[in-house]
Image (cartoon, rainbow, N blue to C red; front, side, top):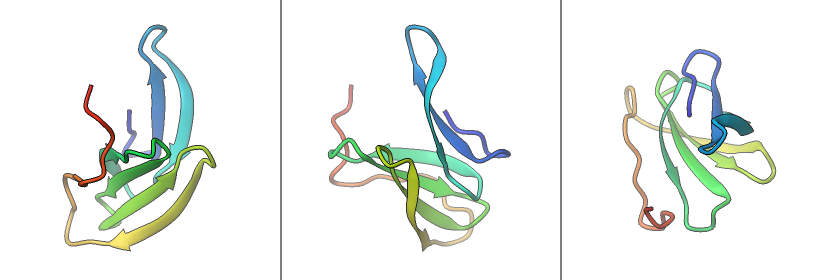
Length: 83
């Protein structure tokens, strides 16, 4: 789950509907893609016009890559399997 105003991306336990993890994704987080390594999350930061790369286990923003105006949608060849 993402919150464009406060900027966190939250992991939700679907059984209990409780937040079990949270990561900062500054700039209006929107679309997300989990990489196959299970530890890297790509997040479009729409208001910042960037793609954010988040290391999930370390709970840190690794880098932000400049993108075009209001980036929307993210897809990578090395994404995690779809369930």
